[in-house]
Length: 157
Image (cartoon, rainbow, N blue to C red; front, side):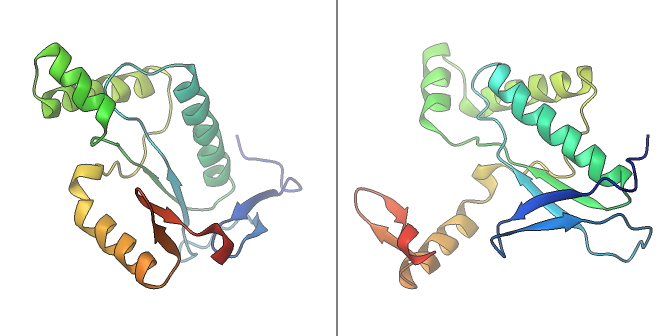
């Protein structure tokens, strides 16, 4: 199904801080809509909150793609988090094995529900160095401040 040509989707562009139209295009050289969605912390099975989020973005991605716009859909896996480590300790298994098990369940559930898989599912554990560099840069440019942790300075945005 192709969306009605008169129907225009507007989304909030976090870079420009304004609403922008997603225009249909047959141009294969057109820029790609980059969509980042916070994914699961894989320490237990998904719940309705997860389902709502991923179903919503599945619909959005399909609509945009059906309009002729290319989408680069990224959904992270937060595989470094206290609840994950606590569950692994409680169950007496390596946290990496728990992650593998729960990510497999997440992907199986996405497939069973007919959702479009993300193009990339980066794991936080594999992105620690870039995250630390970005945090350091934000702090040095005074876009973040140190307290008990590092926080965005919302007054600077």
